[in-house]
Image (cartoon, rainbow, N blue to C red; front, side, top):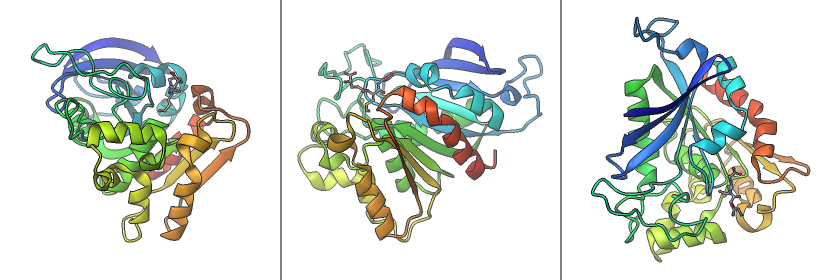
Length: 294
Ligand SMILES: N[C@@H](CCC(=O)N[C@@H](CSC=O)C(=O)NCC(=O)O)C(=O)O
């Protein structure tokens, strides 16, 4: 693991790390924010509160994003610092070259390939060798974080758009691993909308029965007997992708049908951008901090 960026922010330490992933077989980057109390003293190798471990909130970004978009645009650090929660924001796909020096596939579209991993384990060529983002987010990254940082195994997850799909799908599939989930402008039914259909066809193939494994709406529909997590969705009514790609009403109806408590808030006039995210990021930290008891 190599630290490639470190900046003081709201009293804490914002770092970017690069590591060789055993899951994607590429170099991967992630950002991590250590709130003031979680900063490790290099001399004593302890945090301000000796041996304390801190809950971790995982952020999944949307199409075209790297680990940088969220940390630069969301205004998250004030709230991570206030709630004493570690925040981890990974890249959205493998990139560049693999560990054998071969190019990672990229079809050069903004909604497929590099920057568009969709948080699935691809089964189809040429993607399957590297595009294993589900396993990377659910297993490899938390293991790494909990091994190398003062991080507990108390985890929550949130995200935006493609990353909102990722957060909802991962939390609904693994309710024992997370304390809470939230999303801004999520793609809730990827199997039914153009962005998701394009990605799932490429990564998972034409047999649509396999798509349900990665579809939040499908997971919600079968969650009647699952552990229920605190679940919040914020959506702007002025979002240019709302009607064609996002469809949060389908998810809210499915939740109602299976008695899954959730909050869907529609916000008049807000669009799909990080301006919307930064306007409501404080509420998402409050939502997760309550569940994590951070
Ligand atoms: N037309 C845009 C589409 C890309 C876009 O809007 N990306 C969003 C996420 S959309 C769903 O996952 C985003 O977060 N962009 C990065 C940002 O910093 O705003 C395009 O061509 O880029």
